[in-house]
Amino acid sequence: MNLKLSKVLVTGGAGFIGSHLVDRLMVDEKNVTVFDNLSNGSLKNLERWLGNERFRFIKGDLKNPNDVEKAVEGIELVLHLAANPEVRVGETNPSIHFQENLMATFNLLEAMRRCASAKTFVFASTSTVYGEAEVIPTPEDYGPSIPISTYGASKLGCEAIASSYAHTFGLHTLILRVANVVGSRATHGVIIDFIKKLEINPRRLEILGDGTQKKSFLHIEDCINAILHVTYQFLEEGKKVDVYNVGSVDQIEVKRIAEIVAEEMGLRDVEFIFAGGVEGGRGWLGDVKIMHLSVEKLLKTGWKPRYSSEESVRLAVQTLLKENETV
Ligand SMILES: NC(=O)c1ccc[n+]([C@@H]2O[C@H](COP(=O)([O-])OP(=O)(O)OC[C@H]3O[C@@H](n4cnc5c(N)ncnc54)[C@H](O)[C@@H]3O)[C@@H](O)[C@H]2O)c1
Image 1 (cartoon, rainbow, N blue to C red):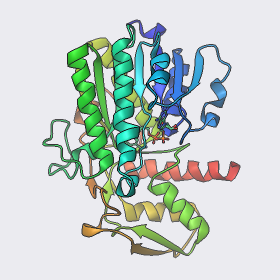
Image 2 (image 1 turned 180 degrees about the vertical axis):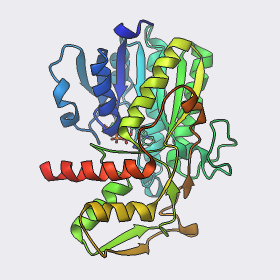
Image 3 (image 1 turned 120 degrees about the vertical axis):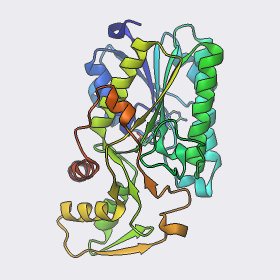
């Protein structure tokens, strides 16, 4: 494929990670189509590209096969980010992850199967597919994968379908298992949760679980660089299927995140209350307590993260607080 001319579809392109990806693809002079139902994304994230002749926005739902079929027409590369990314909704309504993630991905792959041009599929998967891995940092070939959330299960299912479509229908599938991503435009996750709670009560912060949950956090800038770096390499290599972990090189504890949020909000002596958690000190059912992806394979490609987990979190808190002021 001629990378200069590639026509790219970004599902979920109005969301947090998707809109940053669109920014970079537009700067890289691609023709970009965003397909999003705006259930969690916003056109505000794409404002600067509306009206650009290389940019097209389609409001549509991946659960509707007709919408999807039209969206992939003439497309060469599909970056699939649309999903319900909230682990916690699985506890009360498991069908959301199966509809929004599994069925939606199946509809997209079916549309690609019927389309003559759209043959490369890049899938935003997640660290949660590994479940509670016994090997930390966890490499891509760790197994068996035993997810503990319906979110992780649905994403692992998507990976499996996408791999089967590569082998059965000649697609090329790149699976990216992404750690926690933080930064500008984020609408969910632990940082947002802490900021919102401290805005309501600046003296007391309820932390779900025992605060020793330890995970790797990746800054959005490092995340976008990694996604595009491996995608462009994958396009050149022409492999059928490949899998990469996308994360930072270290981890940070949830309690430390709380301290950083309080510091950046200029709050002192905040009382941390550890509450609402479930067995083993996890924050909620399906919460993987210790997550650290091995990024050895990614580093070997020449990608280097700019920020550690702690730096990523601090920078994200600063940015999100500024964004909050301007809303
Ligand atoms: N944010 C993270 O830390 C993280 C970590 C690992 C993996 N991921 C994955 O990366 C992707 C993007 O995550 P995000 O944090 O940017 O989430 P997000 O909610 O900000 O973006 C998802 C976008 O998809 C859209 N969407 C949802 N369902 C849709 C449907 N049925 N049809 C069309 N559009 C739909 C939403 O409106 C939203 O704009 C997701 O697949 C998520 O599972 C995210």
